[in-house]
Image 1 (cartoon, rainbow, N blue to C red):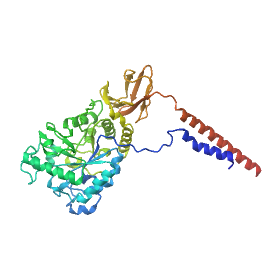
Image 2 (image 1 turned 90 degrees about the horizontal axis):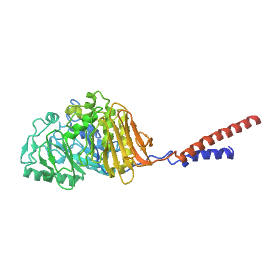
Image 3 (image 1 turned 90 degrees about the vertical axis):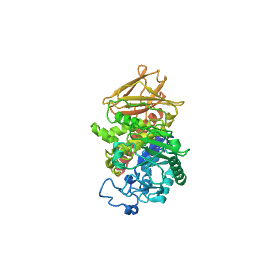
Image 4 (image 1 turned 135 degrees about the vertical axis):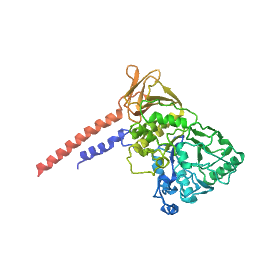
Length: 473
């Protein structure tokens, strides 16, 4: 190989260096400051240790009995959870409970970690690994009555909860003595295991978290039935808002709610409600698309969001057993790949959460959110209709000499006739950055032309060299 051939090859290999975007390595972005919560039932998620299954009786005979999931199983799948964009793991109750109870609410002892789930040592190991990955862990606190407490009440339950709890009694959290006992147990649990917060599926109307939960911890109240009120949880999820999200995204051409900035938790289903996928299937809609639209909308929220495990593989269910199925990690990855993409996008451009969110004019089946920040502004355009939609914005909304750079689909929009036309296909969403208008990327253009020319020169030189060798022979 002569010196000219070597030079051409070297220049071809170096050409991409002229373009700052070519062959760039994937970047690990910081998590957003708002909780992005993956909610899972310990027994139904992953079996990591068969030894603790020996205590389970008839675990393969019925769906309403334990199946062997444990803390070790969750620990082995933390990367899986984090790669989808979640920075917080929310798990079902961990306390000693009846052996035939797979959800963990039929508590025997609030002072002991359940051995079937892995025991205290495995629980501590899980927490340590969660924190090592800069994630947080939230544990659901039952309010099931035991002899430790003074007074019980009947639960205010929905139909799914009734099928599970049947005639079980609950701790009366309006009783002063019970409040003191419960607060002491929660504080001991938080201090001993260093969990980052607790949640509660609320089954008693009119309770005040300040009276029975210690200060200084993150608290999440989850209401599964309309008509129940609670106060002084740091974050509250209402049945009304959950139902509104289900109704909005289970099908197309509906009203998409605007965001509130009150710390409310956005979620579409819980361990005690029908799966979001069921509602989409009942509408004869493709669940994967419905889930992608829902989660894009939720990621744009400046507050906590919670996704029930298995949503990424479109788990469907309407009773307590099918709602909480055994997780299947071998299903089509389309939704999982999408979740990874949108979470990376929102993490990369998370300055959008620093400003005010405005709702722009939109039609039924769509919503357009404008994120007004001190640096770069953003627009989230959600088209959840059955048709392609055009949203027209004028320079009254967007500053002069700006363009819109699509961050999910790559749809770049420049001003034309003094307006910007945002066009999305049916059931499609795009996040735009409002950036300074730019022309052709000159460095990329020059590098591309240089590669083509030099490659042509390389072929010419190789061909001529080969011809000379043939003539000599």
